[in-house]
Image 1 (cartoon, one colour):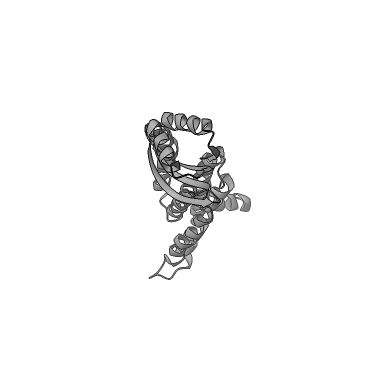
Image 2 (image 1 turned 90 degrees about the vertical axis):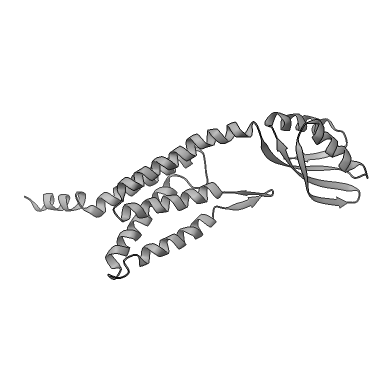
Length: 220
């Protein structure tokens, strides 16, 4: 057997090489789904997260002392939390990026599982991720038709009857409204509401608010 053949066998039949390839596939599968949905973290990000966590877990076993082979791996869990926190942000009184941060956390666990030799477990976990991201999204859309919460920002001229008038509009649309932050500046009211109900009722509400001549600005 030539030296080249020995080198090829040493590389391609090496346990660490198999783990790296498996983690690359797992990260790419999850990253493709995120890339398809045009999320902030996509194919390259999730592939590198999976591979990185696999390498750290392998190194943890190789470099850790006998009584503490998980020392490096344990810190990966902490480090991945900071990475996940970077994709969470607040915009218009809404928190976005929680799902992406959670998937980063899950992908890290799948990469660590492969690094510790649990390749089948990691692929089973990947299947569950696809089920949650695929089927559950459709389920959420279905549920939103029967009840969803939407935040409304209404700017209008303030009078003592303004709140009662807005509440009447919500009631006419069969929606449950909760008054949030209210700001009055020079007789101009900036009124924020948390409104819950069917999607069709929200559409009806938007038409009513747009048709109301007393409302100068509407945001939802």
